[in-house]
Length: 504
Image (cartoon, rainbow, N blue to C red; front, side, top):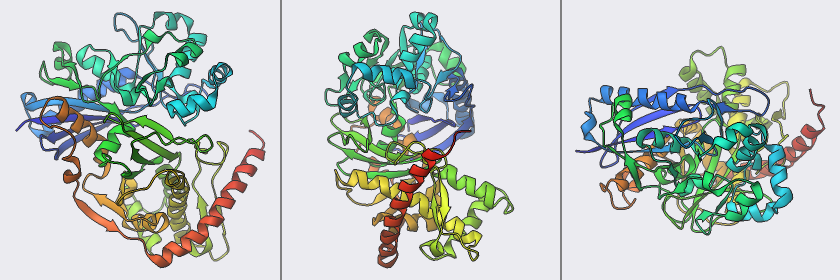
């Protein structure tokens, strides 16, 4: 039986996963790498760290699984978005560290772009709803202004997974999903928009050729084989951006299929046959792996990271990480819906485009002398779910969610939290065996199609096996609906007051 390797190149590290040709997960290896913060608004990583860790993870995966390299039929990557990796004409890396998705240094360059280009028209065309300075074209404008010598040497700008593809095969290209985060991609044309490149003052030839997500772009070179342990000549599929791989792996193959990714940050994404865009609330959109479909999403910047803050500051006496979370689940379970009048706003990392202000800060409300730690823990879970429900309503005004809401990511392990989500969403919440492997499964599916083991993506729903289905409780849902009205008004006041706070 042939096997597949899927790489999930995330913000925190690389996960290399081994799948059977039927899509069953066989083994995985995770290795962390560093993120660098050289100055305010700068968030960087080292592309060679990605490559070194891909090599190490691949070797370890093959050894620990006992799989010979000759069994690997194809590999593919899921990669974190909005990255700008500059390469020269010889394929040499021009910068040791590069800006990643959350780097916001290019604010002035974004403002310059929209002095020449109507922002609303740009957003409605590209679906790029995160802060404009995060998108690749603004980062390239920053390089041109602040690193002119480097900029003049650029032959191609690649995304995160595209750089690893280049190291594996020697081919410089991207796919529609990753290209749709460059800031110059027309979602309806499914191609680059020349006008936006000209407005940015960026030469069109710097952007890589766009290939289908499941196209075979090359094979593993002798040098890459030596470094990774893969067999020379192993096919490499183009892969996709993480949001799209996760949507594909989370059964997002048809109109209205949605999932919630409950990680450090969190987003809700729905598959749609048209881009879901709105000038006021700015959902962000990526091209899907399947042409003619889109992954349309809304997000909050603080979910699991806010819950981790609760753990580290309120529950540090409870033991190691896993024991602490289990104890926190028991605490939340002991408190009734509504947390005895306590509310939590989880915005500890600033507001997303779907929230009232980027200056929004979190907080507790409704504290009294009778408030317990148990109340605060449950309120934090409810607050994260309420924050996501407010963003879900943005999507629900433009599309219908069909079936259950699949929940994946680290937070999906908590049964009490899944029930809270079901009650606040007013939707059945589904947990399956795929759990945190959705992006990896999506990349594996691209590899399987690329090398001809599969013909389409209809197998994916059958790979999911239900582990739990949480149904909304009518009484709890009715209570949460009343509390949501309070939460929305309170969040508006918090945003206003946060903006009035003196800067340090």
